[in-house]
Image (cartoon, rainbow, N blue to C red; front, top):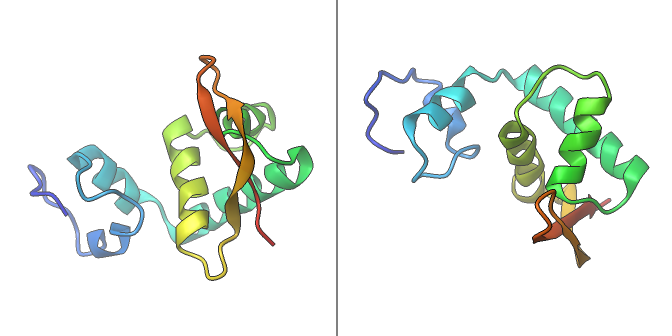
Length: 116
């Protein structure tokens, strides 16, 4: 964990799997403030989006999330939750799809799909 310019609570240890070690303090603070029930709900929402849409880029997942009248989240938060589902669960809940898609800016982007 990076050296913080602010004081992080003991819960920061729980955030270690949610934030890259090189990320700035605001990312660590945001990860600490997310409670487990909120995280669980967000992941369930992402899984439902992927089940409905099929393989999708992070931009597509976020666009569907926004249009679904769900609790307000940033694209970074939704992307982080999707990433956690590729790494933290055993077996993984989400996996990389074989084909690439395009981001909202037109760049090549990984597509993700439900792994189970």
